[in-house]
Amino acid sequence: MIRLKNEKEIEGIRQSCHALADLFREVVPQVHPGMSTKDVDDLVKKFIKGVGGKPAWYKEDFPGAACISINNEVIHGIPSRKRIIHDGDIVSLDIGIDLDGYISDSTHTVMVGDVKPSIRRLVQATRESLAAGIAACVAGNRIRDISNAVYDVAHERYGYGVVYEYCGHGVGLDVHEDPSIPNLPEGGPNPRIQAGMVLAIEPMINLGTGDVDLASDGWTVLTADGKWSCHEEHTVAVFHDHTEVLTACDDLVC
Image (cartoon, one colour):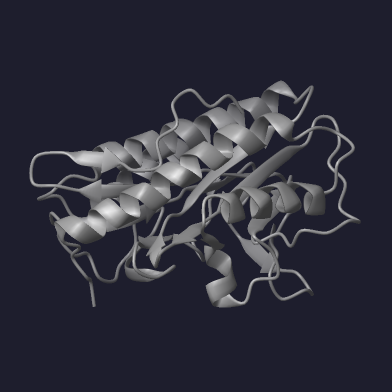
């Protein structure tokens, strides 16, 4: 069931999302070669505690405050002291804050040091596909309009693989809500986008195939062919006459 949010609920979600944008502004500049993904997770935990919130992923028993995925890890990488970030890596930080019961959700992929031009192109394509998806997310359109926009940029324009086993979703009062938002055209439910929807739009784009595998830890999702992947995400709220990017942080450099 799709839950449309009222003005009070959207304001609560907005405050959570603004805190999350501030988190990215503080944490991203501190990501550097030689630190572990657990070091990054500690920074995330400290920030969330400082704003009076809780890591949203704890609601789903994920063993970290942030999903931290490196290179060929698509999503849900578990923070660890053993996983070290190196020069040239790309590191996706998928983070949510539970602030007084209101949930935010956003992902940014950080390019660490001297990243290859081919990988920078992948990151740019993923960011463009997210922007296209957001532009299509307006009242009166349908969910598949978002899917088509993401796919047209990532696959038709750039030729990359689009992950199809995982997708965007409703968010705000829980971590994962209806509707599902695939990143490529497919069958299934295609509800009309309505004012009051709060959605997490999140392209997961791969250099090679869109196929993925689940690692033995039961969480980390890997590209099936070992090629690198990029993940970008924003939480948006739909109004009758506009769509607001609640997690916007346009001054972020990553």
